[in-house]
Amino acid sequence: MAITKISGVPWANLAKVGGIAKASITNIGGASTPPPPPSCTTVYYGYSDGRRSPITDACTNPPQPYDYNSTTGVLYLAGQCGVTYANGGYYSSGGAIYFFDGSTLQFYDMCPR
Image 1 (cartoon, rainbow, N blue to C red):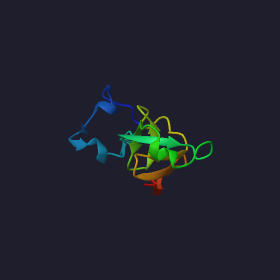
Image 2 (image 1 turned 45 degrees about the horizontal axis):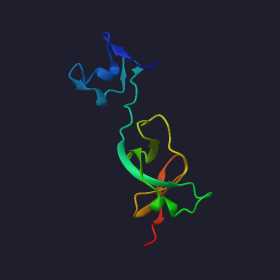
Image 3 (image 1 turned 45 degrees about the vertical axis):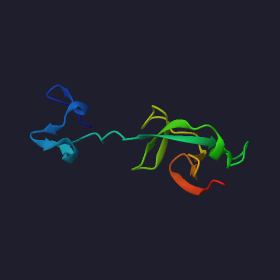
Image 4 (image 1 turned 120 degrees about the vertical axis):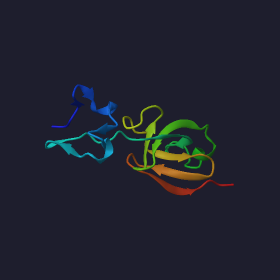
């Protein structure tokens, strides 16, 4: 059972418990604390599924916003950090091409000149 509140205050709203930083606490009285939410930054990528269109189309297709968690390498739909994964396929901001297999965004190749 995970901790959801301490003295009526939601766990997410706390920074410290008893003077100890929340990030340093793994359990309280044997009850586990919830993991921190994912942290994402907004990135802009062109997309190609690599099947219906060439992979290199990711280099020239209009960039769209996505949420990216650099700790886990997961790419999410814009505004959906930690919730909705981006489609599998090829992504590019115009220089490098990355492949997202549904779990990790990885370097694939460079865009043609």
